[in-house]
Length: 227
Length: 227
DNA sequence: TGAGATTTGTACGTATGTATA
DNA sequence: GTATACATACGTACAAATCTC
Image (cartoon, rainbow over all chains, first blue to last red):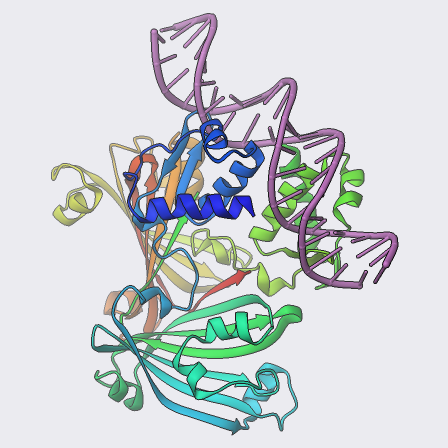
């Protein structure tokens, strides 16, 4: 798709700091000529870049490159993926199959005897354990699941390998005090304040595919919106 | 603007539960005829509805209405405005002018002698105090500021009355324990866990116009993303 | 201050591609 | 396989905001 290519090209230029913050991008007509496409196509690419906070535009004026803080935390990935620019290690503390649990079955809206995968990972950033990540997934949806998958990216597995399509994504953020076990895993003191993010991933038709609870010790979460 | 009208019309139908969750909307061509506009215009309205989580579409299949949890907390307004559907009262606890403060001046990037407005409001939802909101704004930007404005909507004041345009918006969310004073205002116990949201509103060219710290006692914040 | 040029925004129409039913 | 429905892409015209001289 042309507009995707153009979007990627401009995005890379911005990420590689080819433009100064607030500096104007070429006008739409100029971009049409440069990429050899119609204005509709350029505007589609521009629209995506705007949505993700890379640029903004004003009628009569032009298109302008945003400073990095506008787009850095924009893409709603797994919270831990947000930290991928740092040296990141993942330690799988636990990996179980055939877990049965009444509350889980209710949450996932499946038969009470259903089996779940369960794994617990600790994310280590710059040699410091920062995030505990505990995940449950129904086994009947993911038959090819292995420990190897858990050691890599679950997100990618769902999107590319499993054949399912992710429909939406809900996160609930709250402040909590660390339990004894959590404190131990994170080298912190019991009752220290942390953020708990419960994360549900849904497939088409609102089928819940994954439930994750993250405990994150860097006690903040940042959201930037561009008008 | 036609596409805005169409967007509003369909949005209202969805909010008023004229459609069942997951039920198909009319096709694009049908909507063109109904509203008497081109397909481009329909697609612009559809695109906005998608962005805000009201609907989703799949190629070859159709356009489908999302269930309420997709769109309820979508719009990034002031966090307290998110609760406007409940009976909401605002109590202005403090309103000061001519506040000088070194840290504030640095944060706003203005001369150290600059004056700030400062006000502290408590938001009362269903008769229960839930949110403490403390705001600082530089006086030189907002000359017409009065206590009356503070008692109503600050957001509207900036957008409509002051003549400035909001460029972007950053929020930082963290877990905190209530101080003695905060606990008193919220009828809670000292050291109870709450969420603190620091909120910065920027005008064009990254001019910081408002700094708000919210302490919110309902200890969660929900984000839903639709792919 | 004002008129004209520039630039993005809105809207129309048409044709073809691609996923789904 | 065919029909349907959304997705992509082209081109054109005019409106509205902004910038420049």
